[in-house]
Image (cartoon, rainbow, N blue to C red; front, side):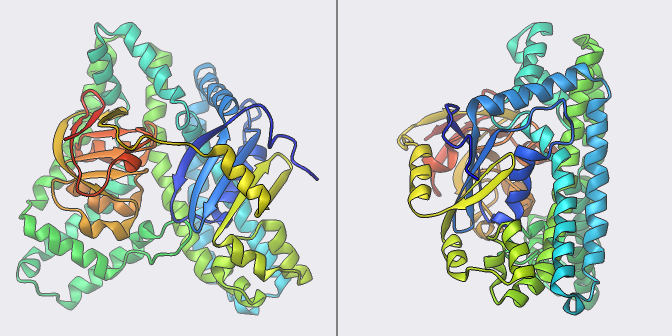
Length: 498
C-alpha cells in the first residue's frame, strides 16, 4: 500500500520540536491524528510527518488541514454546550485508568509470559494510551498550530472591552486556572518537607527521616522527570535533596508561600467574577473561558498519567520484549506496532535497520497507513520542510500569557539536565517547557518559549508563579543563546536583545 496524501498540495506546517522522544510514544498521537478521534463531529488530520534525529523529533501537519481541524473543535465547543465538560471528564477519567493499569503492570511476572501474551499486553497498553490521547489531544489541537482558540476568545473580548489593553488583561485573567494543578500539588508536598526539615537543611545535615521523606516524595512524583523516551532517570532523592539545599539558601518563608498559593487561587476566582460581570460576558463565552481553564488542568493530569505509564512500561514490558528479541530497549522503541507483532509472533526482525533508525528516520502516518522512511525518501522529505531563520534579529514577538517586565541573562533550558546552569533571576528560554524543568522555572525572572497555546505547560506554571511569560515566539532558541542579555516586555509580548 502506498500513501495517498504525502505529496498533496497542502504544504507541511511545523508543529513542534520534542526532545527525548521515540516512535513508540509518538506513534500513539500520530495514529490518533489520522485514525482514532473519539468524536465523529471533529475533523481528523489527513497526514502527519515526524522527523527524527536520535531522540529529537520535529513533527509536521498539513497547514490548511490543521486549521480546519482546529476550527471544527472550536465549532463543537461553541455549538455543543456539554461538549467541553464531557471532553475534560474523559481526559481525567482515562488518565486515572491508565495510572491504574500502569501500577498493575509493574507487578506482573512478565518473565513467565510467552510471546503471544506479551504482544497482547503490548496491544492492551497501546489501546489505553490511544484512548486517552483521542481525548487529550483535542484541546491542544484547538490552539497549538494557528492559535484558533486564543484568537476566538480574544476577538470576543475586543468586541466587549473598552480598549485592546483591557481585553488583553481580561484574557490573561479569564484563562488563568483557579484550581490547583498537579504541578502545584507536587510543589506543596515539597514545601511541606522543606518546612519540616529546614533546621537540618541550614545545618547541612541529612537525618535518615529526611531521606525517608524524600524517598516517598520521589516514589510519588519522581516520574515527572522521566520524559517520553526514558533516556534519563526519574527524579530521585539526590535531585530533591539538591533542590532543598538550594531553597534553604534563599531563606524563604515556606508557610507564607503555601498561604500565598491558596490566596492566589482565591484571588483568581474573584478577579474572574468581576470581569465576567463588568464586561457582561455571554453565557456561551463564559463557558468557553471555563473550558480553557479546565483543559489547562486536565492536560497536566494527562501528562502525569502518561509519564507514569512510560516509566512502568519501559522498565517492565518493553524491557522484557527487548530481551526476548535480542535487541536494546531503545531499538524496540523505534519499531512500529506491526513490526513488534511480527517479531514476537513470527521471529522476523531487522536489527540493522533499527540501528539506523536510532540515528535518524522519518515517521509518516495517514488514515490506514503508517511507515518509517530512511535513505533517499527520508532525504527528500527533510528537504521539503527545511526552513531558514535569520539569527541576527534583535527583536521578536510572541503571545503574552503572564504580563510583566524583566531584564536578565538568557539560559536555554530544554530538559532537566540543563537546569544546573540556571541562576536566580535568569531568563529561561525553551522550546516548550515540561514538568521536568519546573525547578528552573521557579528561579526565572521571565520565561520565553517557541511553542505553546493557552493550555501549554509554560502558560499554566508561569501564571501560578506570577512570572512574566511569552510563548509561541517560534524562534527563541534559534536566535538566542546562553549568556545573551535580553529585555522581556510581557505586557506587549516583545523580546529584545540588549
